[in-house]
Each structure stands twice: as C-alpha cells, then as structure tokens.
Image (cartoon, rainbow, N blue to C red; front, side, top):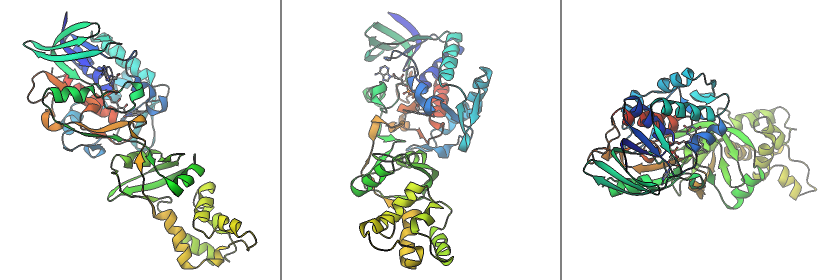
Length: 404
Ligand code: FDA
C-alpha cells in the first residue's frame, strides 16, 4: 500500500496547481483521476485557447454565499503570478475584451506547462483510477481504488463540479464533503444558455446564429456583451453571465441596442420624409435578420404586409408615436421569460457546492477535519465568465498546496 504526504483527487486545474505547490515544498504528492487524460476541461476551454485568467480579477467577479471567502486565496496567488508562470514557459497569449487572457495557440500549452511543473516538483499522476471508499485513519486518510489502497497525511478534493457529465464530472466532492460532516449548498448550472418556449422559441430558432451586442439584466445585475440567438433560446457571453443569477420564474430584461434611443432614432427617421420602411430603419440599428423579425413581430412591418398582401408597404410615416414606441421597446426593453437553462449538459460551471463556512479561507482546509481540503469548482465560489474560474482554481489550489 503506497503512502504519500498528500493525495489530490482530481487532475484538473485546481488539483494540478495544488500538487505543484505542495511538491515544490518537498511533499510527496500523488494525483488521482478516473479520466484517461489530465485536465480535459482546460483542453476544451476558451474554444480550445483557454481563457486562463483575467487581469481584472477582483472579488466582485465571484458568486458565493460568503462573497469575502475568495479574497485571501486570490491575494495569495494572483492573476499576475499565473501570468508570470505562463511567460516563463514562453506561451504566447493575448488580451481579448474585458481583461480576458487567451493563448494565441492552444490550451494544450497550458496543460503541458502544468504537467512539466508537476514533473519538476516530483508529483506523481495516476490516471484511469476509480476511487472507492475514503476513510479517516490514525495517520491521515485511506483511499480504496481499483488499483489498490493508498494512504496519505493530507487529502485534497479537487474533483470539480457537475458540469459536463459527459467529460467525467461527478458529485464525488459533494459526497465526500457530506461524509466528513461538511455542509453542501444546493448546486445549480451556471454560465449556461437559457431556453425559451412557444412563440419565443420560434423566433430564436429563426434567428439562430444571429449575434448582437446587448445589455442583459436582472434587477441591478447587468452585463453588456454579445448575445446569440439559438435553436433552443438565447446564449452568448451576456446570457451566460446572467444565467448564473437567474432563478426559475424570473424575467430577463434585454436591451438589443444599448446606448441607442431607438424611439428617438425612429422618430427622427420618420421626420425625414417617412418614406422609409420600418425594417429598413431598424436595419441601421440591428443586424438585418433581427431588424426584419422585430418589425414583423411588432405587427407593423414586413410580415404584416405579407399577410395583407395587397396593402401598401408600411412606411415609418404610417406609424404613430405609440406604435413607434412599441417597436422601440421591443428593442431597448425586451423582456424574456426563460423556461429553464440547458443544465449541466452544457454549463461551464456549477454554482453552490461545498459550503465555505466549513473551510479556512487561507488554506481551504476543513475546519473540523484536519488534513482534509476542498479546492476549485466544488467549493461554493463561482466566477463570472472571462477567466475567473481558472483563476479561482489556481488560487485555491495554491492556497492548499502551500499549507499541507
Ligand atoms: P475540473 O473539472 O477541471 O477537474 C476535476 C477533475 O476531477 C477532472 O479531471 C475529473 O476527471 C476528475 N474527477 C471528477 N470526478 C471524479 C471521480 N469520481 N473520480 C476521479 N476523478 C474525478 N473557465 C475559465 O476560467 N476560462 C475558460 O476559458 C473556461 N472555459 C470553459 C469551457 C467549458 C466548455 C467548460 C465546461 C468550462 C470552462 N471553464 C472556463 C470553467 C473551468 O473549466 C472550470 O472552472 C475549472 O476546470 C475547474 O477546475 P477544477 O480543477 O476545480 O475542476
């Protein structure tokens, strides 16, 4: 039976970072994972280019029942620490909008870097290993696996959340947390497309593939990024962001032309002779397909003409202020009632999870179970879209690795 100072369950972003930091401090570390390859989520992240951190990392970009919990770890291992590591490996990267850093080449470079760091720190990684019963022993922990039992002084749980079960996500972290008496908060899919039904679904399907910059809000929470129409409903960065705040039964407010007063613009266009058709005027503000659809759905545009085939084409001049306002509201103040999210199948993250109340914010160690740590996505800390979730994985992983 092999014994290690620390065993890390999960060879993802958080687990590898933790193992590196512990290994560098001379600890004997074994990382176990049931997958055939390590860090599969890094490989597929950021469209294959891995949005590995965000230069604007700050506490406000994270959701948690305890919003201050993440501060200590984020300060202990910052975005600049990770950027320095990436630079040391000469991995080319660029900043996209909103401080998001992506590899120029491939996310595989980040995985190779982490594996190199593991090797340099003497970390052993054992893949394709099923984890069985985990028990507390006098010397630490005993872990049964399909390849034999192992023991360790410290046990780090880094098996992630429930998102993308097809890629091997399981609820192991939550089961272990409960087994050792920690509270687990209800989990939900986050950073996930929203679904709609009925006439709205018909509309989004028709517009599938159309993207528009939008301001999306629920109450005071708002995001201004691209919105994408899909065959199931709405997606794109602004929708993924708001999905982490959305609850069943809530309406989402959407401004499809932020910072443009569509009513004023339509009125001005009507003032210039009013010969222009509604959908043409809207095309100056929105992508053409969307403009046509908004005009048609308002009942005053192209489709309305089609249904009364013989009537004269509707010009802006034919539309009263009241009608123009109704059209403008469909653009600047569109209200959507989603009927659900796409769920864990496509969610980038899992909200909720291991309650931070039972963990030390400095080390990620369980307050009442010495030697037991929870890091990464399984903890009730979830970042906005934009590299924040990997930064949480690096920071929480480093916090544990430097402590055990
Ligand atoms: P992670 O899920 O990475 O690793 C957990 C590991 O545990 C896996 O290797 C898994 O096989 C293993 N495991 C699970 N259950 C097990 C069991 N029962 N037994 C043994 N092993 C088990 N974030 C970001 O900041 N920038 C981005 O660009 C993206 N992009 C992105 C795209 C997509 C499609 C997804 C799904 C997610 C993202 N994310 C992201 C989110 C990011 O991938 C996520 O937050 C981190 O991978 C979480 O790291 P962890 O190490 O906590 O879990």
